[in-house]
Image 1 (cartoon, rainbow, N blue to C red):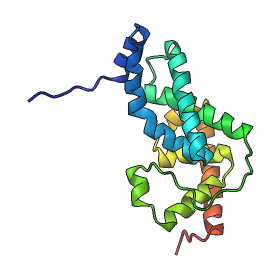
Image 2 (spheres, helix red, strand yellow; image 1 turned 30 degrees about the vertical axis):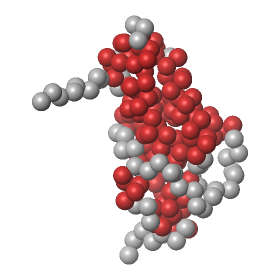
Image 3 (spheres, one colour; image 1 turned 120 degrees about the vertical axis):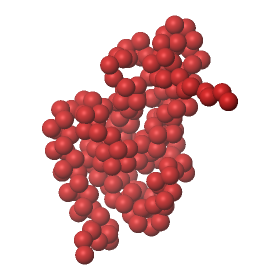
Length: 185
């Protein structure tokens, strides 16, 4: 029985920098779905999320020589993704109406489990938060990143991330109540 050993990110990056640029496709395959799903939660538009995801990987490829191996590739590309998603959102209409039926067509196992109306109300409530608050909620509670990684991705001190998350949770709680979700009995 032969076991395939998955190439780690650092080896792929090294290969790309040494001329085997086709290896970058392995990184795209590995991270495309999670990048897309996170971007979708931020921008609330399937087509925009696809475009931003493509831009993220183009930027990552173009800047691969600047990648520092003391960081995880995942954190590094997430930082690129956050910058692109936030910039895209700021360039667009921040106050556009949200489609009540908008649900990502590509769902994670967690999203499939919670795909009932409660999940949709929660997603709508998160989408109604300002972008700075939405981003920390998504990274902490939907992507489950530690504070340290969120701090790196957003280029903010860890204390600021914690403070912003505290405020975001309070705002989300109010929004959930406003949208008919009873938090406490």
